[in-house]
Image (cartoon, rainbow, N blue to C red; front, top):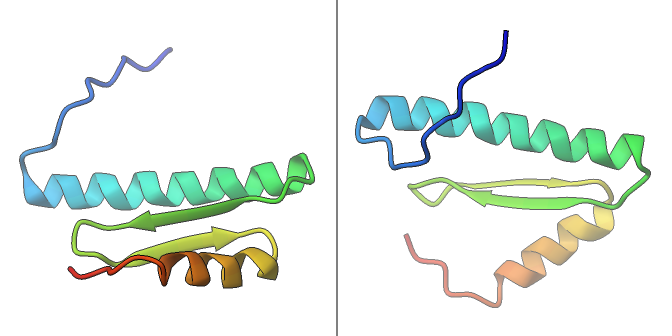
Length: 78
């Protein structure tokens, strides 16, 4: 049984939006990890929540330090 196509529009209910963000964020980070393992690729993902919380994944420590130096270039005020 195939899943139906999801209509891409903003979720108006704040609770549902937060739950969807959390699930999709975890799925994205899992896929990034899988890509780094299966394809021996160097992968970095940076995600900000609606409230400005930073979530990151890096397949090597080199990208963790890069992500912070990259983010220092911006005035991130939430």
